[in-house]
Length: 64
Image 1 (tube, rainbow, N blue to C red):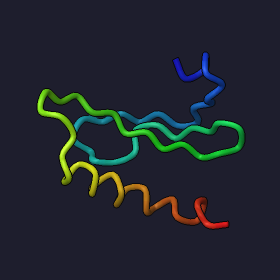
Image 2: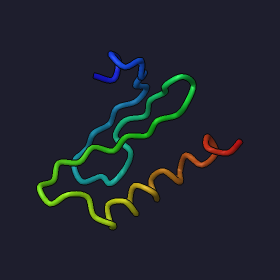
Image 3: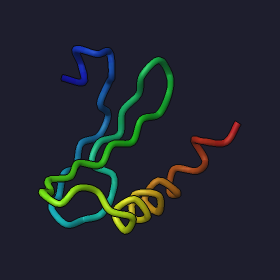
Image 4: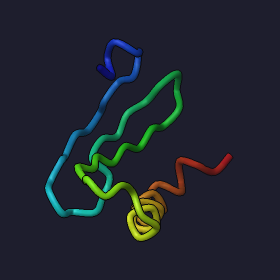
């Protein structure tokens, strides 16, 4: 699905319960960080905070 939309996945590391970034990709020279979830209860604030924390490791790529 990513390839069909011109998104190039560089690293895929889906490990259940790791709380980190599952897919690192690029789209038109932009970094895309993807975290996969399988939940019946929806996304809660704690999950968003953990994702934000994981994204902070990539801060160097986000600065202009």
